[in-house]
Image (cartoon, rainbow, N blue to C red; front, top):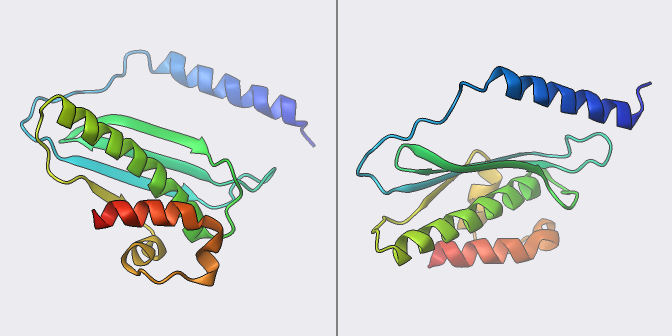
Length: 151
């Protein structure tokens, strides 16, 4: 069996090989008049076999241009797929709120930002104001997100 440190270094080497092979790649920023903010989030629940923490991934677009993205391990272990997805959408919501506020300060008008999640459970939790016993462990993020959606 491979020790964790050896596994870590193999992953680092793989990342470095990828970066060396993609030095000519870049992001294409297109000029367009759209200032729509779109946020997309996803999570995989408990995928890390060592600590069972989920991974959050998100991307935020301004018009057709991707302007921010991230993928990172969540800080706490999620007890359900819906909780992992909810943690993920809250992270992208915070990013979208910041971007919307920045554009407002720069006097750039935008429409109401839109967030997308591929998890039906999260969509239903956002729409249903009734708290369920299964959501008590992530209630703070739930209330934060609902308050923002209602505004």
